[in-house]
Amino acid sequence: METMSIEKKYEHFQDILSEADLHALFEKFNVKDERERKLPVVKFFWLMVFSALESSARGSLLMLIGFYLGAIASLFTSGRRITSLSKNALSKRLCQTPWYLFRGIYLHLLETYRDIMNAKDLMFLNRFKDAFAIDGSVIALCKRVESIFKSVHKGKASLKLNAKLSLKLNVLTKLQVSNGKRHDSQFKFVTADSDILYLCDLGYWSFTLLQRIIDAGSFFVLRLKSCCDPRITATTDPHCSHLIGKHLSEVTAFLNGQSTLDVTVQLSSAKKPRFRENIRLVGLVHEGQWHFYITNIFEAAFTPDLVYQLYALRWQVELYFDVIKNFLNLKHIISQTKNGIMIEIYSALILHVLTQIIIALAAQQQGVSIHDFSFQRSFKVIKGFLLANFSRILQSGVKAFAQFFQTLVNVVARMGLSPKKLHISQMKTNFSP
Image (tube, rainbow, N blue to C red; front, side, top):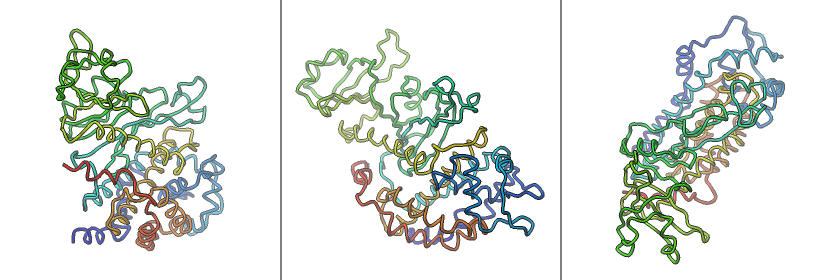
């Protein structure tokens, strides 16, 4: 009954994003059209979102204009059809339309998506309130914006995206955009919420981060840093009791012939360490090499193999970056102002979360998990459908979406399923409390 009520609740696109929602956000961020404006802000919004569909669309400002004009069948101002669009008009929109508007629309859609996902338990990792994969990715930019987005390479410009990806929702919940020289450790992603799992790579390693997660009552899994030589303080295996008091570097002889290690350690080697927490260290042999991970999850159900599988889920954020850079074309950023660059980024994120909303509704229709769907397959279906209806959407906006939205959900339900179930969905029962 609950599933049916949610499907009915979001049966129409207006329930997800209505004209009233858009205009309320326009008013909130004080965005309005000037008199005789050739490119109305509502149409500019849809055009920027749609430009993330085609890799060639944002190759240059002229190509973007060509994409607009080639797709626009009905763009009117004061009853007059627009047949031209100048670089100056588009540049002004990219410079003067506050990027906060696009972020506001993304956050609105994100909350709707959360509501859809909470309607039915399609989630995995049920031991945790949520699970996040944290990582960063660099995008090269036009050299002219070097003063805004400095690169680690002299004479070049680049920005860094630090992302906090929800593994339960498969969407971005926090984004930090900075210059390419900014270190990952400056990304603040830990919240006061408890029972949250954080999966980070070595770029975020710091005792301060670990302490912040522990103090919040949350959990982490990280690879052991190569320069860290922890001291073993306890073990639940009586055959390993002789290891207590030794550093990891001192037990290599014992590890020969072993396949796993599961001990409690003190990470800091300082005489008066500021980080005094006892941390769990697990090790596994993979392809003849030992791999070590640290965590504050001490529950027996989380065996060393499961801890390893938890950390392996961090790869999902790498797949996310691949999607937004290659499928949603963020590697083709052409703006030369910070405001325009942020609009291009959030345009792609809006298209991503819209795709996830459609997948979520299709998954509920099929009675399966969102992780049984392929984003790439679903996106290709949605891309073809939206491009075929581009002019209708430019002319009517939300009203046009409303006419074919349910049909789009039905098509994705039939054609978006992954040929092979994702490994994540197979782990669902393993992580149930």
